[in-house]
Image (cartoon, rainbow, N blue to C red):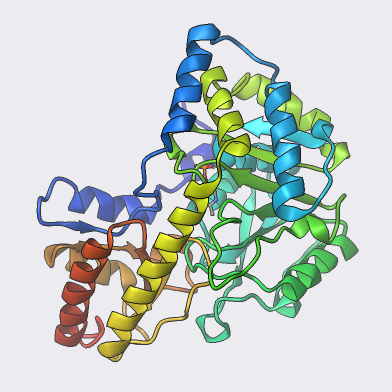
Length: 384
Ligand SMILES: Cc1ncc(COP(=O)(O)O)c(C=O)c1O
């Protein structure tokens, strides 16, 4: 007995290595994980309790009608787009939406264009299907913004999906609307679906407005969102996607054959999240923005300039050119700071570390102190 070669080829995330190394050490400053450090707002938790007391059974595969309607309203409110409820599918987190879309679109040997650096789980889903992730670079020298011409040059006859992610994990970059539009156009010209990962859409800084690739092509984009980051609901596992109408039937089949439906109390929590008070979003976003400013200032004072992120809750920390981020992250654990190595996100950021802003200002200040001292001692990790 053995699993398929594709299943065997799925590599665990490089963030886990650091997480495991750092685990259980009382002095450790944890800035390696991408999980909000805020609790789920209490009105959302209470809505789940009420729902669970009422009924917790199977729901429609695509999600409760009231939740799909709430999603349609949210897309109108936040993105000024009109998506019919029939094209919305509720998923077990955005991770499962992405996996289901990959499942629907990618077969053995098919290629998927993915950002480098990019969220590693997406490549895992592709590999699990026997697909081939083809990375396109988000160069630090260009503020981690992709070059549409470079992306265009990587399409082949086997390309089935173009994955974009804005605001980005791990870089925090918000891709400018004209670049998103160019990427969507490039894909459309080749009849390739864009999978737009927008889970950080409302976590944008400096007065920016949330954006969606759906503005540029209603029928060639599958957009994915989540309650995880926006409402500090990672463990509730509620995400959702709006897909072109030609993709709804296969996607529903895949959902039915895999998760059946998302847990009903969690769907009720999501209804409350989307339709109830929204002030927690602003409070969390402002906190991330403030922490970003504090961190960048402390690093600047030590002579370290980072690309300024415009969203999500990450800062990429540049090591000296040619340094090995994995080695650096392991060495930093010994200094009491856990960060995610750029090597966990592809190869284009192999001399960068990702710092998560999902920790208190006090933790971030203490980490910056340890990090800058380490940077000076190791010549930006070159001496390791
Ligand atoms: C870019 C990106 N996409 C998707 C996800 C998955 O989010 P969810 O918790 O909704 O599955 C994450 C989580 O870290 C992420 O960073």
